[in-house]
Length: 313
Ligand code: UDP
Ligand code: MG
Image 1 (cartoon, rainbow, N blue to C red):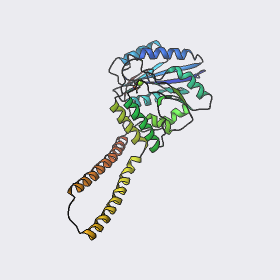
Image 2: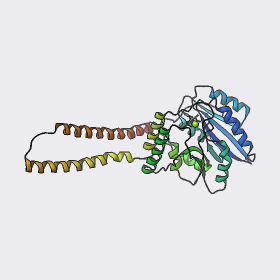
Image 3: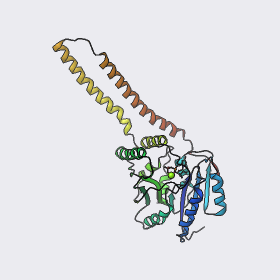
Image 4: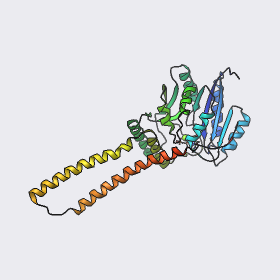
């Protein structure tokens, strides 16, 4: 079938978004109506919601044939939902956005214009404010972006959201990364392409609750680091080198001291603290090693990233 209009796919992961969906759909309908020369498909991915999100999506589908959906057999996480949505997308341009309207669809015309001009392959967004977010969370987020850009080749812009619009080519490049541990912010940056950054003020979610606790975000950031950098693995060698050097210096000091003053045996407390310290460093670095081995183990199993229970096709 030949299409006359450019097709834009919107991929939207939804987990317990029953309350936000009506607002989202109204906004999508409004924005798509403002671009009559484009065709749209709204790919809603129900990530094993425990509320009535799936039912809400099915009834949207009944009302509007542009709505397509995939429903998972359980909650697999936003990364899995994104992957499923991207795989299902057939558009010439593909956009990814949250269901809670924190990624304002009103920016889509501007994003599309940037990419269609041919000057960019991707229009991405970053929040320039973190208004309405706990300060500790912002602090850790800033530290994470700094660290990430130092130790990996995925340079993630501070405040970058997953909200972006890409060409088919870039979408296919992202889909060609077959890893199980998916860290989208890193993947988007890793595949390269010319990205235009649009800035906007933080918007609070329209309804419902955030699914990310501080702890969950913290673990997610560690995931990002292990997925895109092997620098932590070097730590063991660095510590080893530093301690060997310190040991030589200490040995020299002890020898000289013994020759000059004799050897009164003392220093149980200092010995204890050195032993404990080195033991701690060893466990710490073995722990890091363990993280990478665990990731390798999960990748080696080759399990699917998600299981679909039901879909509109
Ligand atoms: N989400 C998901 N699966 C999850 C958690 C979240 O699909 O396990 C979706 C959620 O429905 C929303 C987006 O990911 O569309 C972002 O989640 P949320 O708004 O809770 O995160 P925040 O904006 O607070 O970082
Ligand atoms: Mg949100």
